[in-house]
Structure formats: structure tokens, C-alpha cells
Image 1 (cartoon, rainbow, N blue to C red):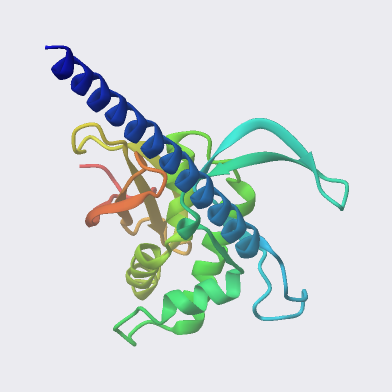
Image 2: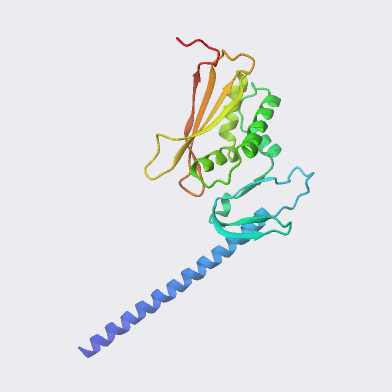
Length: 234
């Protein structure tokens, strides 16, 4: 019995040692991954182009969480420190290059590319400046994703501009349809005819799920018409 007891104690000690070793290895791996993530993030955010360069980055997207810490940059500006979990979701761009990339996704040539380019540029600048936010709420994150992933917006603008309409309002609403434990929001773009208020208004709605650090589009673009502001109600 004493031998069996000693064997059990030895086996338990071996299991405990292996568990401790596995825990240390896991902590080491997590530290290595964190270091790689930090290095990738630093490399991604480093500005290496001049202001006149076509590759100059003037906007970035960071899928992370804001901490309570603040840091002072070399320029003297004080900014918050972010915790970044998914460096692969970090992007940098400028408006002209983003618009040109979005235009290449169109499979039709029926729309005047100049008008479409102007419409997309105005949409992006409006959100960047007039509706600027830090992305700390689900609503704001959905709006920010809409101007980061411009492919849905491009298809929307192409259809609206083809019917001689321009962007009127931008709204973000809680989506009534969503999978369990997700956080879905509808980005609603309304277009009107600035020269004829009696024409119907075109409404486009696309859904964004912001439950994860990296938002995703859900479903297809939905569209319908609304009576113009000068139309008679029947």
C-alpha cells in the first residue's frame, strides 16, 4: 500500500509539474504574440510617405479598445493609448486612393465616373469631418466601418447617381434583425434630387455587425423609395 501511495504522489507531482510548465509556455507564447502584434502595429502606423505622395496616409482604422493611459507624441500632441488585439484589421489610406480602389469594384460603366468619384469623396469627407467620432459606441463603430469598407457605399452611390440623385442624409439605427448575441446596426443613406423636390427619395440600408473587434457586413443592400418633400400625400 505504501508503494502504491508513493506512486500516486509521484504521478500527481508529475502532472502538477507538467501543468506548471504548460502554463509558463502559454504565458511565454502570449508574450511573444503580444510583442509581434505591437511590432506589427508600430510598423503599420509608421508614416513613411511625404504629404505630396499618392501613398500618403491621412486616415487610419484601428480595431482596439481605448485605455485610461495617455502618451505625448514628439509633436507635443497628447493622445490615448489603445489596446490592439487584431493588427490585421489595421488600415491606413487617403481619400483619393480609397475612392479609386472602390471604383474598380464596379462591374458597370453606365455611371459617369467623375460624378461617382465626386459623390464618394463628398460622402467620406462628410463622415470624417462632420460626423467624426472616436468609435466608442456601437452606433459610431458601424458608421466608421461604412466609410472604411466603401464597397457597399460605392454600389449605393452608383445606383443613386445613375438616377440623378445626390446624398441627403446619413443615419445609423439599431437593426431589428440580428443573430443571437450579436450587435447589428443599419447604416441608412437617403438620396434626393436637389433640382426637383417632388421626385421620390431613394433609401439604401446596409447592416453592420460590430459585436467583434472587426466589424462585418451582414446580408445584402436593401433599397426602397420614399415620397419627395414636395410630393402630395394621397
